[in-house]
Image (cartoon, rainbow, N blue to C red; front, side):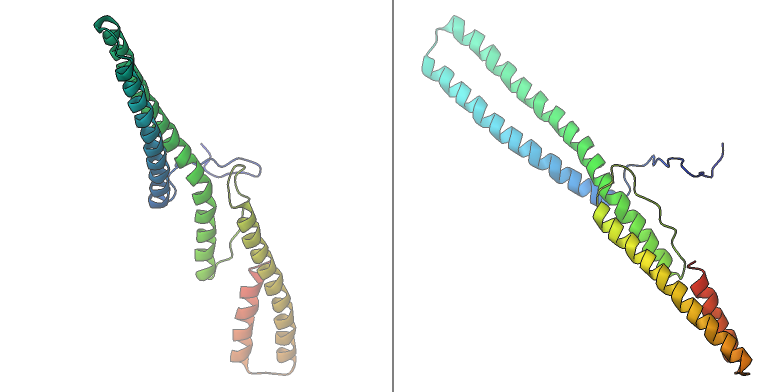
Length: 186
């Protein structure tokens, strides 16, 4: 199996928890809010239903039948809340993944910049969020590339002039290192 990815190949992440703390925190908040709201509304509906049953003062034969349906309503409510919690958990992980991915990529690029490396940006995945933020960041990298290219050209001209005018050899070497660093952005 070829481990390198050619042009046009999709890179698929197998890990949905890119930033585990961030994703789990916000997913659990989403699930908790959904469960609390549903359980609260369900409680009031069940309570209202039980109160209505009491007010009807049904005879014993009907009361047993109504009690069975009241119990079924509670089971349905609990089942609904559990299914909804699972759905919200999966949805929360997917949505936070779409935010955590771009943040992870930008953080990695920033680490490369801090280490003196030149990032090679790639486009975001189709469903990622923060597209505008990533575009702004990519635009900044492009402008840094242009600026470094222009500065490299100017410094290259300065080095040629220094050589022509017999400037200090150590200073020329230092300037050539700077030009080399600027050319890495090309």
